[in-house]
Image 1 (cartoon, rainbow, N blue to C red):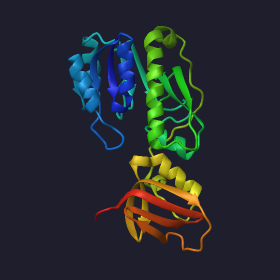
Image 2: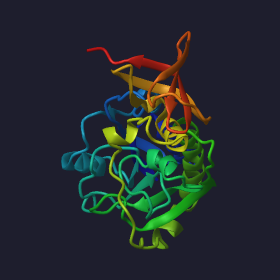
Image 3: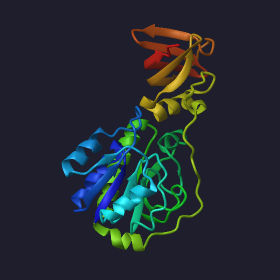
Length: 276
């Protein structure tokens, strides 16, 4: 199979698994880098190794025409921010690897809500690309467990591992899986997380604050500390009775700051004030 890949570095494992299955890459599409979410340096190295081009501009209809001229069989998508144009007139196949157990968690970045909503089972799903986001018929899925200790970073790694396993299966059995793809049932769409989702309110519980710190990780939470806006990359919260005012700084040591919340304390380990 001759394939084009559209995605970013965190789904490099998909590209590598398909190459290992003797699929031949003809072009890579990626996105401008966004700290914590999207990088393309590793894919650029792959493009150079395979003597193919990497494009950062959005994939447009004329790019599909160019892929047709390259005798491309299939467009493979994983973590690509741009909508894929109608491919049916130019390519035999197009599939997407989505980091959720579809039809649950359609949308641009479901990892955060997987932790905020306390899911205990998760998946990467491979589906046909159709006219609407993440709704195409499902070829296969790779499931795995997540627990109360998982963070944004650990879930990201689990998804990469599952994606590689799923891509290996797709690479070996594509024709049969495409023909047997199952129509999705009713599902739900999760929009990209909001500023409110990532803002820590010390009047809420230790449980809620823990979930936010785990769900966002290096994507950062926001908080008001001593009446100043702060960005938080890591921290921990624990239950403990106290008589302090909510939001009061209880302790400071080196770069660590401890703040009282409704039913305990939260410590920020890696954080900084937002510069005006």
